Image (cartoon, rainbow, N blue to C red; front, side, top):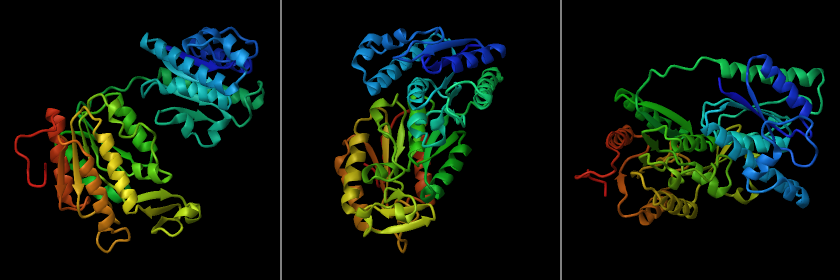
Length: 415
């Protein structure tokens, strides 16, 4: 069994981390204690010292102490912890990573954890776990545990919580590995409620062809998660029919993804089919959370918790240009599919977001900005028409089978 890497500030959390280390040792788990503190004297001896962590970040503890900038110190030690953990993982020494800390400790540990592949156990015990955890978890598989009391001493509550964390990590490390019996090629697909008919049909057809399809909900975190796994080389092809997160990024919606969404410069070479699913909408929470600047816009109450705003002509033109710019950076094969009769379930004739003018601005900006060598299927179909899904399946099957986005004879509606 590889070791559990323990990350924390030994000047402020020394007793708690020593207790955690002892609990893991009693469970038969080897540990590597990494000190990411800066100012006070460590109360426990580390296996990887704070000096080592600072040096790994290209700095020194003396420099950080002299500058006295807490924000700079956290950023530097996070970068150093990331480098240290990445190096230990490359040497095969990391079984899992476990951290205790407040917001600073969680920030440092999360940076180190996010550098590791999915599936390696990652657990942070922190009081920030009861709030918005996305800044820490991002698109990774980090687990966060709320300790109820602050991690400031060993008491009746904190010892139980730390013991639970040790037990959780010991259990994850000792769990039998899962036998991988499914050798089917993998396809990633993006879906939203308003593109479900298309993606569900495509998923079924692809499974009939012998693929395993992993569907990601395009809510920001979903797109980030997919891109992370694509970057790790998990997939044979990507069926990215729902690119709605770009609209939230543009207009400040709640489903915006991070900078890695459709950043094809980071793609290891995975072929991709891309469409414009749900780019007719920006997502907000309940109606009273919609920014005042959008009060006169076309709004649609999806449910009590979600209000949708129709993207207008100018926004659609901007989105088409942004998408083209990102796709033009691709070195792997890319095929674009345009559904001329609507990009979502509510962007169809007689539906609340039907706007041929806005859709046309989106399509023409995309077509006008794309590299000439990118294959385009410009189809007189709605995105949820069965024929659109079937066409997408045919293309992604070709790409996954051959890795080529080019064919000698293209059907009508392609370039």
